[in-house]
Amino acid sequence: MGIVNLVADSFSGDGITDIEAAVVKARQLVADGADIVDIGAESARTNRGPIPEEEEAAQLLRFIERWDDPTLLSINTWRPGVARRVLPRGGHILNDIGALPDDENARICADTGAALLIMHTVGQPKVAHTHVGYDDVMARLDDCFAEKIALAEKAGVPREATILDPGIDFAKQRDDNLRIYRELERLHHFGRPLLLPVSRKTVIGDVLGLPAPERDAGTIACLVSGMLRGAQIFRVHNVRAAAQAARMIAAVA
Image 1 (cartoon, rainbow, N blue to C red):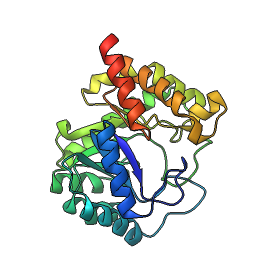
Image 2: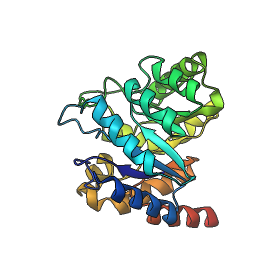
Image 3: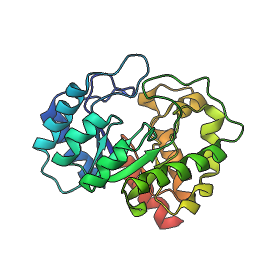
C-alpha cells in the first residue's frame, strides 16, 4: 500500500498539495510495486486541529477525478461526512483510523461496496494519547477487533470485506508497539488480512534516534518482521524498497 499525502504538513515530509503532481506520484508508486494506493487529505498529526470536512473531501475528489488507473484505491479518512461524499465517486477501501466509534462508516461501506479497514486506537483522532497505557495491549486488540468486526457485520459489511490494522503508534507507547510486532500472530485467529502501517513510524525513531525522513531502513526491518509473522499488507512511503524487500523475503522464507 503506497502512501499519497494530499497535505502540506505530512509528518514524513512527503505531502503534495498539487493534484497533478500527486497523480504522477501515485502512478510511480504503482510502477514501483504498489498494489493499493492510499490517499489522504487530512494529516493525523496532533499538533493542529482538523481541517474542514468540505476541504478534505474536495481535495480527495480532485485526485479521484484525475485517477484513471485500475489499481485499488484506499480512501484515508475517519469522518463519515467525507466518506459519504467520496466513496461513491471512487475508492475500493475505506481506511478508517477512527476505530469505528459507531457504525456510520461501516454503513457507508455497506452501501457503496467498499472494504473497511478497521484500525485499533483509543479516543478521537487528531488528539495526542501519549498518556494511554495497557496492562496487556494484545488483549485490548483482541477485544477491540471482536467488537468492531461484529459492529461492521451488523451494519452490513461482510466479514470478508474487513481488514485489521493494529494501529502502530496510535495511542500506544514504544513497548506496546514493539510487542505488537513480536506477537502479531496472535491476531490471525480473526481470519482477516492484517495491515501493518510500518513506514517511518515514531517507534522506529525511538529505537534508532532518527527523524522521519531517515527511517526507511527501520521501516524495511519492520516489514520483514511483519512478513515473517504473517502480515499481508504494508503501508509504506518508499514502495520500491519495500516491494523489493517483500519479494526477496518471499523467495528465501
